[in-house]
Length: 59
Image 1: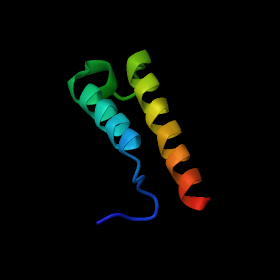
Image 2: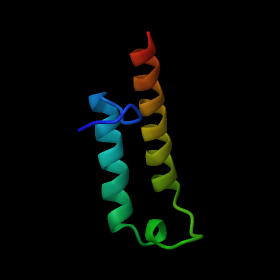
Image 3: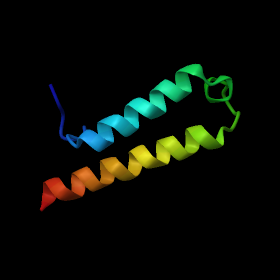
Image 4: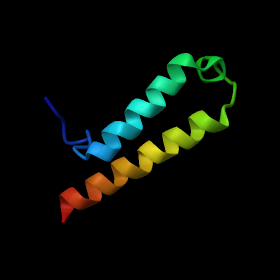
């Protein structure tokens, strides 16, 4: 089941999966207040893919 906020774009799904898999194995990502450049990059890639998917749904 999908909600209107969930992206239907396969790239967004892959980007989300990559971000979650990284965060699960990264001590810095699992530590509140710590910073991880890779985790931030993966999260931003997901956010951009999700934005693109929503933009395409509106068209």
